[in-house]
Amino acid sequence: MQDPLPKVGVEQVQVGMFVSLDMPWLDHPFLVNSFRISSEKQLRALRELGLHRIAYDPARSAVGPREWGSALPAPPPSASGTDDGFRIEAKRQGATRMAEQRELIRSCEKAYGECVDSTRNLIADLLREPAAATALAGAMVGELASTFLDDPGATVMLIASRKRDDATHQHALNVMILTMILAKGLGLKREVFEAAGMGALLHDIGAKRINPIVLRTKERSRPEESLYRMHCEYGLQIVGKHVASPVCAIIREHHECVDGSGFPAGRKGADINPLARMVAIANRYDNLCNPHSLAEALTPAEALSQMYARESAHFDAFMLSTFIKELGIYPPGSFVRLSTGSIAIVVAVTRGNTLKPTVLVYEPGVPRRAALVLSLADSGEVTIDAVLKPRALPREVVDYLNPRMNLAYFAQRAHG
Image 1 (cartoon, rainbow, N blue to C red):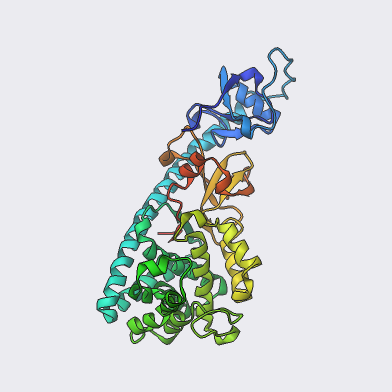
Image 2 (cartoon, one colour):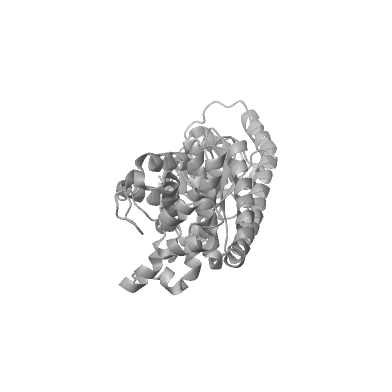
């Protein structure tokens, strides 16, 4: 449990201090409850709230409290509280949009849970009745493809899923959505788009024939590695007769590398099916962010950096650069520091506006279910200052912003 923040008299507060207001969000003119004071104008507005004492965070403050009895600087000219009143009214109007955004996140989490359940049932059915199950898979892929292709404002949401026991099915969903993000960036036509999504959803179906212990083992023996590599062939045996040839190519070749270092055939460059090259990128990214051991998980920014700086020889260069561009500088799941000094996590990114994502803000005095969900596209005064590593943050901050520590994604239409 986090220790309570120290409090100082309002006369001691000065520019550069990180303060936390213990009052309803709609009763003050500031965008967030906790922030670093950046101007004398903000300081004046703070003093006009009528508070006697204010909590502050020494660790996030650039300066300490003013000494008692020191002369206060002359406040800048003020036209009464008109500006603050206007800002509070604007916040009241924005509160409805924020409530809608919270409800959208909750509905996406519910829909995602249903998709995970459907994927689990689908994969089980594929092993028993592959013909019927692949038809159902095609319908699922087609619906998601329509979200991306028919709605330019479709948003990729970060989902707070706690279903660690469903990691295999989450991986299939994640790789499908990530592949579709790349397919959208590449401008693929619907038929090819859906084939890429279908192959991504089914890419690891052959792993169902392999002992889970072998799948989770990081350092496999030679026989174990040979068995693991058979999952590509097993996948073709399960669904190969029921899916189109591009889907078969993805299942067979999603572990091939452009430099020839992959498996099962050591194909190189253009000899690897283009859709398989796409799924290879999405698959690697999700495995870096969601490994079997959460202690080894990379942040989205770290995963993209590793793929670009250290593993680029494995991937199609143009596809990798497109993937990075589409996810943006701040992919969903990124921990960031805002220009207010607050810490937040990126929960949604809209194509074409990746520099201004939607974030969930850490407010220690506010329950997470009521946390501030801030669209930076609608808040011109707030920007992202830096990307943070969760390992460097206090445990309570990480638990508040990302209680599941497992990155899962869902695509949400902007309209209807």
